[in-house]
Length: 125
Image (cartoon, rainbow, N blue to C red; front, side, top):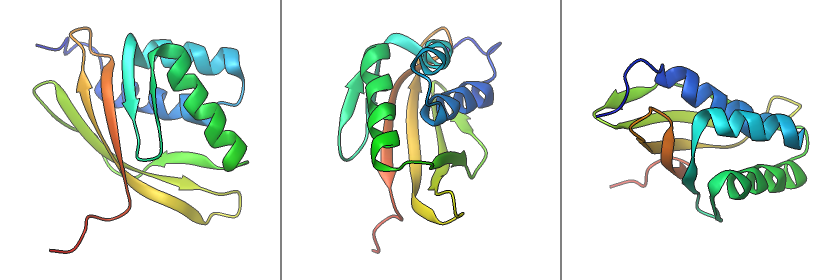
């Protein structure tokens, strides 16, 4: 069972802060706070593993979406060792470039072990 003394909302907010951080060293510090060393991030266009792989994904996002920031748009829903939350990527003009949800598995120490991202709305039935 996950260490419940760690606030999962803080973990998620550190994770998003890492995405928003342009400084490599500061982004690395945020990633280490939020992720286990062997964490795996899986998004539709690509995936990263470990601190460096996750940081590289954020660096690529900054290249493609200069000036954009991730914002959490929901609370963090938690059960057992799993969580989910909604987010959006917002441009400097306030326009939403993409929105989605992330679903995560937590490690025993309460940090992120795996995050799977989904972009856009769920498909119609």
